[in-house]
Every structure is written in structure tokens, then in C-alpha cells.
Length: 331
Ligand SMILES: Cc1ncc(COP(=O)(O)O)c(C=O)c1O
Image (cartoon, protein in one colour):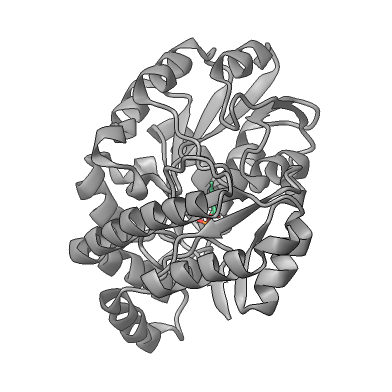
């Protein structure tokens, strides 16, 4: 089966990280370093923030959950966008929050409407850049203007799970924004471009006071020893990251062109996936599965006519295009 359903890195785990994780297994009879000292040290040097501004999570999903647990009391208000990543709603529900799901504009975040939805009891606002599943991207200018406009009692969680896939012209320095805004958490992950999805490791960056609250809420041994070691190695493996970026940029272009040739509409994507309009999502999904390709259904997002295809290796991208072409007459 060709797995293009979960926005994983088609290169898999970097060899450097595999070796580091295997070596770390030697010590796995002991509990992990609950402080994540080595990884925080590496991240702190890379991002130029104090180590106590960093929170490690079992994937960045845990950072999203922690943000809701720490910032929101039952009945308080959370804001996120329609078609926003599924965990935002779940995290808000786990915190017994009241949520406003702000209608999307052109399948992306409508920041003006999100700002208008923020009220006195709003405690958390989720913003994904780029967003999954739509691939939408917000330029630095409007995003910064939004952060400036958010009142201080509301924390913004800026989810950058796919940030490493942004084109150079799209990139911005969100860590500088963390230095400026005490109510900002930037969440990042090793699951995507770094290829460590199965090890479950991500992190949050926030100013000390907020980071300390997140850290206090976190289960003490939430990140395993092999995951920490693999993340340190992956962070240093710039060649792997560059290769992942290039493979994705070329593969995404090929997928977009191939979908266009098949006359299937797709959305411009800043991530490692493309959302494609296929009509009967469930039917097409089943046919692709029968042809040996697994892509993501988007019914859960209220997008039953769309599928999301993760950018794969070149031969995997061709395989999904062939499978889509061959089922095309029945569409
Ligand atoms: C937008 C977004 N944020 C966060 C995550 C969380 O990933 P993880 O928990 O593996 O770090 C994902 C995973 O698909 C995602 O798409």
C-alpha cells in the first residue's frame, strides 16, 4: 500500500536519527530525561531563546492540548477557523471550552473575522500556518497585524507543523514574535519534515511564564529517550531537511500539474500535501485504496467532495495520478 494519507515524510526517518534512537535504546531501562536537557539545549541554540522558553510534547498535538488545558477554564472561549486542524476542536472540547469556529475565507483563515470573534472571555486562538488539510498560508504581514490586535487575555497558538516546507520567500521569524508577545505559543513538530512521526515529539516556544505553566501541566515523562535522541540528531541533520524540502517542492509541483491535466481542481498548498476536488470523496477514496493508494478522506472536515494527498516519492506521486486517472470515467 502506498501511504499518502497522513502527511508523513516519504523519506521516512533520517539515518542519523535512526542511529541516535537505536543507541539511546541502550539506556531505555531508565526513565527519560524529563527536562529534555540535550534537545532543549540544541533548540535553544538554534532558536536563540532561553531553554526555559521551550516545552517538549509527545508530538506537537500534545502542545496544542496543553495550551487548551493551561489557558482555558471550563466554559471559557476558544476561537479557530473552519477547516482548521482537527485537534483544535478536540483540545477545546477536552478543556470543556466554548468554541467559535470562524467560517473560512477561500479555504483559509479569515483573520479579520477571527479577530472579530475574540471577546472578553476568549482565552485561546488557534492559527495554523500553513493549515492542514487546506494547505492555506498566511503572509507574515497580516499574521503580525493579527497578533498585534489580539488582546492580552487571549493566548494565540501559532501551529507551524509544516513550517519547514515554506518556500524561502514565505518564511518569517515567528520566534521574534514570541519575544515580543507574552501571549504567543509557537508549536512545531519533528513529525513532518524531520521524519519522526512515529516517535512522537514536538515542542512549543513561549516566554518563560507561559512556558512554565505548560511545562507544569505536562506529564513528567511525556517524551521517550529514543525520541529525544532522534530529535537532537534530526535537528542537526541539515542535509536531510534540505532533501526533504526539495523532494516536497518538486513532488507538490508534479502532483498539482498532474491533477490539472486530469482536470481535477486542487488548492494551492504551502505544505507537504494537496487537497483535490474529486466529487464523491468516499467513492474515489475506495477506488484508490483498491488500486493500492491510501489518501485522506475529509468528511470529518465537512469536505466530502475533497481528498487530501500527501506528497510522496516521485513514483508514489505518479501512482496516485495513474490511480486517479484510471478511475476518472466513473466520476
Ligand atoms: C496542522 C497540524 N498541526 C499539528 C499536527 C500534529 O502533529 P504531531 O502531533 O505529530 O506533531 C499536525 C499533524 O498532522 C498538523 O497537521
